[in-house]
Length: 448
Ligand SMILES: [Zn+2]
Image (tube, rainbow, N blue to C red; front, top):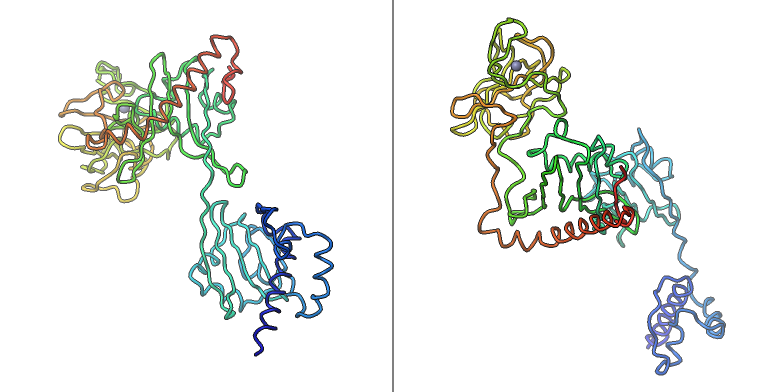
């Protein structure tokens, strides 16, 4: 029987491999009970003694030459690159690339992003694996299997989420204050969006307004890769404070609510144009700028550059998308039985905006212009309740849907930690202020 020698030979190979791997640090250290260690086990110890190496060394000559070295090349996709070019530059054939594209995830290689990472592994100039990394959290690995064919696998990494906290006291601009705390503008924008139904960030902000924000930072292998969700935040505007907490409901939809489960949203946006300026207020006894007679101004004029998107103030149905000599291009939206909003002087309508179409809150319905009787580019916006014009700035807006009564217990359980943490950080900030040492708030005390 030939089995014993073969067996021994395999055992020797395994032993040698382990030896090589341990010597090169590939096998992690494991606890070894030294009292019970047999002579055989010595070869498995992370750092073999010189004796063992000497004893094993002659056996190398008895087996096949060591496997070919794996060659690894890393590259980054540049502007204008395509896979065919990259393959050619790295010495791999178009045929190999074609084989990769035939795998399950092969399509990703047809549309690669500048900045994405590529790692080629080859043996004797033959590609054994390719790893494509479009972003820090995603990897697509193509590996040649035993039959010489490629198989692909998509791997998603879960970032480590670290809770971070910032407290800002506004000097004159929310954005400048945030920037001084190291917050990127897009996070500040998200913060402002949470409170946009209660606070007009263009008109309402005053010095000494402050905010507290609890949010996630994402890390991968200890490296910062981006900002996650804002979990809870408070904004104090002109002495009035608003608190919001993020909640993902049973259906998986995330939104912001106050600690009692009422939506931070209203059924209507306060202003249908972002970052605009009111050029003419709601005034029932106004002298008209063109006619020079007393004519009520039954809406608000928002001055904004021509082409600025105009947003549907609430969910509803387009009743009119039309044109008259006075109104220019205009849109009328009906929201349920009670509410109607009107938008005048548009330069043009957004695509698909016509009578009968459903629109969602925040959807672009058209663009600011100066069509009709208008002295310059602006949006004339009207808000009607039961057919009567109301001031859109001051009318009490209906709330959006709160957390459903069936879910309120779950809501309280899931949001408790965020609320407690926010309170804890606020207490710290208050304490630090009382002690006259702002830096004591550590993570994010504001500069003023
Ligand atoms: Zn007007």
